[in-house]
Length: 239
Image (cartoon, rainbow, N blue to C red; front, side, top):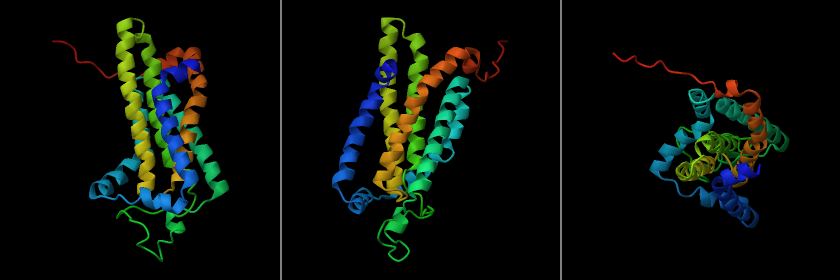
């Protein structure tokens, strides 16, 4: 796990710093006031972008998982098992806590102007805590970051290779973290979740990926041919 932490330290450091700030905000600010503040910056661009972006957590990750089969089957297995484990944890907690969503909390049926609502987005009412979409986003993008690092270690044998791979992976970790964070924010922007829900969903997602990493390594060592298998596209024959 030391290598795992060292290899993915940029994502982990960004996650720890941002979520420490979010945790502090949750502790010191009123739940309703924090949501209203984060939800107050609606724009035409945001109202168009976020309803589509948040759908990555609905079915977009399935497309990405299938796409990984063209790279390595082990990558798809890791991602899908992590997403499945995250979904089980989230759903169990959701049904135990059964917290109301912003729609119910702010009583939008009787106070429709209490929150800005994006037209065409179906507002959910129950099982707010934690955010399943946020969990999915963080599992997806943290997993992609880990996979790139894990499979690039073979190329990091020379000093030049280390420098090149480190640069690209550092950049990828930053992009992956921002993509996951944006997915979490989309749930607050659309008033489907509170900040506390996103906070918990992100933590669950990152912890699931980290916890399953040893099993992923074991699988690669135990069944290398299975994990290395990939879909090969037919190549054009030279005339």
